[in-house]
Image (cartoon, rainbow, N blue to C red; front, top):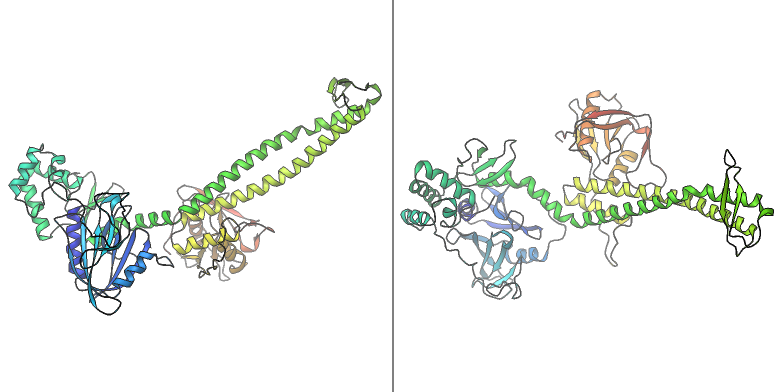
Length: 563
């Protein structure tokens, strides 16, 4: 999977056809290594996605991308310099993975100026650089100083230079015979093709080698040259046997001979959106939730260790009755014990056969004080057992709560859901509020809403706080409440509207409850359901914690129905 130079050439032609002369309407930076330009065109607003990490690429997109409430500094700079600018040219040097977008803009005093954005799609070195008309760097998404590179520095006011070119042949400029001779000289296999032709990925090199076996090397290279020169590539998606996307490219793929399926698209927008839409969302959320995941994982580890240590201490308290028995036996035999004795053997009348028992004594204190010493140790062990039992329960409840937050974090799909989880953890004291920081009031998120096949509304909580709101305040007493049995998950409500809830609605709501739980990848998941009137919240319980009675259980396979 690679966004190679020739793919960049094909995408460039699609961008030129769609965006030439378009004006910048808005600029967003959803993540540090991601930019989105919204252009006004005669056909409406079109979005250009520039991604610089985790499968770097540039292409038009129709996907909806959530933006942070506060734009980063680079985003504000781009808005200041390019807001309302017109895109006048898109160029690319020799099938390299570099695009230059040229803009006609107005500066702060209203004079026209020419600005460029260089988009370098080069794996982990991918970057976006804003330059002035003389190609001096204004700023870049990733700055490169002298400590990182002596050959190529990207800092404001320094001249911009292109990345070093590879020693390969540009298929648009080279003669086909010259390309073929070099491939043969290097061994004639797919590796030789990869090391000869500029801007192709390993999959394209393998495809050309495959075609060369049946059509001849000259014909395979000639066909590639024609596709690149005329921009007649075929947006192609290679899928696994289960239909999941595996790779993409700009030409038809025959090398797998039916082992994998191939789909063709009308545009690179459709191809790349299809391939990356879910993957991008997951990667973006993983990056934005990394600090929360770390906090929750560390808290779970800390609580688990604490509970294990407390249980080990509690186990020691189980022998406290032996201390009381020794105290009683000493008290009953005080007249037989000599002062200064280090031990005494007495009949143990607590045993069935009155078997004798030897009790060690502290010779420095009296026999009566030795008896009191055992009573004192017994009382301390009894008190410690009570305290440890309470502490273990409290820590176990806290551990369950943190695990439930971790589960809801794994299901969060938007920045708003992450903000709600952060607010919940802040309210519970797990995240510190910085001094002087204003508490941001986010708009409350509505629950996720589905509808059963027979018309009942099904509401799903997004987090623990919303679970409480949904179950204890929003739902009517006659509504049906569902939750996975002894498995972390969300609260689900079937809105009855005063009607008897059907078995079909309960089954479908149970499938949804299982799909929104930690058991979403399992089969035959137990889901409890009962009327909302049978659900209550214990006093002082953490958010999302409830108890319920008079319930039934159904076993289902998780399934998300259409909202």
